[in-house]
Image 1 (spheres, rainbow, N blue to C red):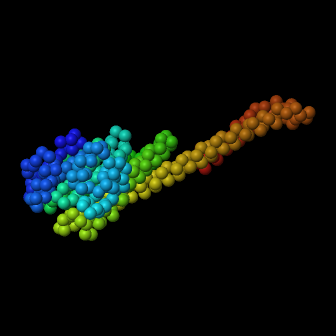
Image 2: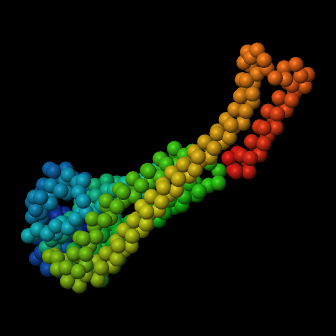
Image 3: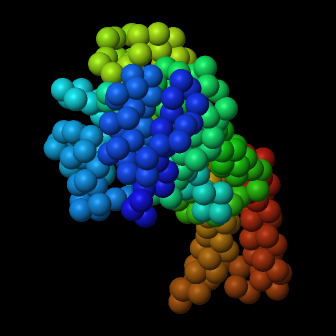
Length: 330
């Protein structure tokens, strides 16, 4: 078995059963049985490594190209011999508070499922183990795998959205904190959070149409009784999208509130500067007048002239200070 093939198994009547070591023989046996299918899981195969699998299972060349190059939007494409679904699982890194989208491709056809994943996230071992404990679900054939994988991906969307909600609450507390914080750092964090939400929406929003097709339309290679299961996935996906849209709106509101607070603080600073400048202008003006070389200056011969002028300047400055204090400028 090539190293890129993480697991290869045959399932008969909802249970994992012994199969030939060669997946080509396993596929022939599954097709001959009529109640079995083969599930091959691959991780980042190269073109050469995937070539034998694609030829043996009759995968369409365009779908194979998409599976190898990755960087695809979530979508559902129907070909003559298979169904091709692209999912984008997301991973939340608590250390950096970032969301990373990986890619997962699912080929569903006559008696087979091929999953190709890119990135370290979206490991399907847990999904496979859970399905193997539910034979009544696995009896639906390859459709069960597509449902279980889609359900796991969408349920994790809600978990990641909850993590982002926690980050948003921290940002809101920082924005509305009574003490002034680093404005540049706060604005940068809000912008970074909006970028993470945008990356998240690119994974969830385009998936709505494929899930609706699986839930409400007739799609080849999908079991006719599976629509209620996909409707459940579609409902969870709608909930996740609404959650994400709410986060985006709250981040926009937080950014607007932060910018408004910055404007208020700047106005406060300008008022304080203006108030202190006004108080400094009075003694400056008086001292400037007395510093001029007039031939006739009143009160120059008065012995109390100097202290009187000083007292006048102090009284005027204190009066201005009291007035600005009452108006909230200081």
